[in-house]
Image (tube, rainbow, N blue to C red; front, top):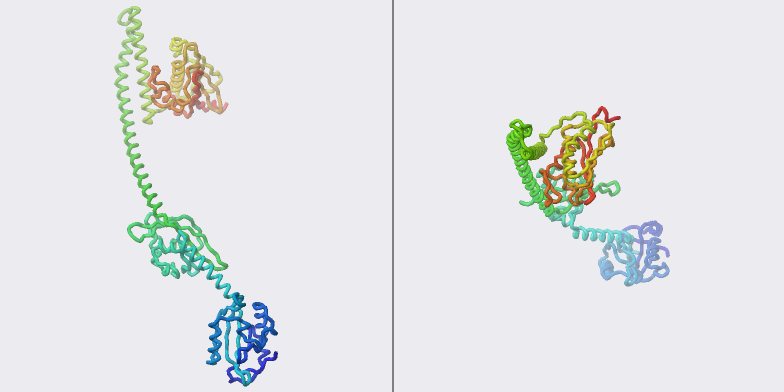
Length: 521
């Protein structure tokens, strides 16, 4: 249909508008004075086809409101236009079939003059995508708001200009600021955010603030800061990961209230410090007691040794007949005296050695030691005891075994302790073997017996001071022999261990370093 000459407002010269209307990017609809559709440009025809499935032939000459269903508010505006002759604009007008909105239009309606008849010019812009995008955006914002309201953690999001653009309700609560004041706040100029402190009480400087660090793209996790709003500070744990939205950078931090945990940790740290100080005090006291014990043992041992030396000397004079010949009974009595003094001297020496080890005053006189001769001498010295117990002692030390790098007197003491223990706990008819070999650049020495053995549960305690496997069994000794033996072995840089089976016997194995000049052979 041809477009008539139209006078806009009745004041402009008559011009043909069909060519112009066809080129416009908006839909144009011209109505006559009865609101019947008089003209449609191509864009408007596209709207009708796309959203209402109508063709121009179906709508030309029909009342516009029948073709394009509109709400009562819009119809009243049309009537107002006809009576007052003033244009109006309506944005996002819903359009569609009855009961179904298919699109939204931005509509501008203006009165025109078509020759002698008044008419209406309707220009329409399809706003459907914009409306849908806005609704989607509103929905996303509503969802985000719901998430922020329900978050148990505090969340702050800062744009590239340093302004807070989003925050959770929990952030407002933990920072002690209303949400309305928090949103839009410039974090670099906000004194409200500056009352942060490190756990040690130092104030957090501007560049050290978590939100500033997040804005600068720093990645950090589980860092603790204190916020002071009153007498009791709130402890917050902060984490941040840099966020990029295209070329625009954002800073975001998540934080949670760990005050209960923080206070508990502080209390535990205080308790640990209190207990540690108590342990330090107890340790000092124990060291003082150990020192007093060592001093006491030294003093007592010295005081006992002096008369013991005299007793031993006079007993030896009697045994040698210095004061006259002794009969057999008197000789027996003197031998018992010498045997008793020898045992007492051994006890005193054990006490002194143990006291020196405990006090750290123990020293070695190292020299090359030929183990074969030393082992044979020790075994020979114990033969009388072995014969009385009806136990055999066998020594197997190779002649070509390299010399030990050790204190010969202390190595003899180790062998004596192990062999005498084996004799004590080996029944009559049993045997004891002392063997030595070179292994891994050191001497490996073992003393094995066919004695009563040690229960498995007792082995971890066998080297403890005064420990006895069976307290009901009476045997001579101080209960310090094995602890002293272990201390002597370790003082040489060696190790000692035991394997045993009840009723089968025990094997004590220890290592000793070799004298450097021969250890490489």
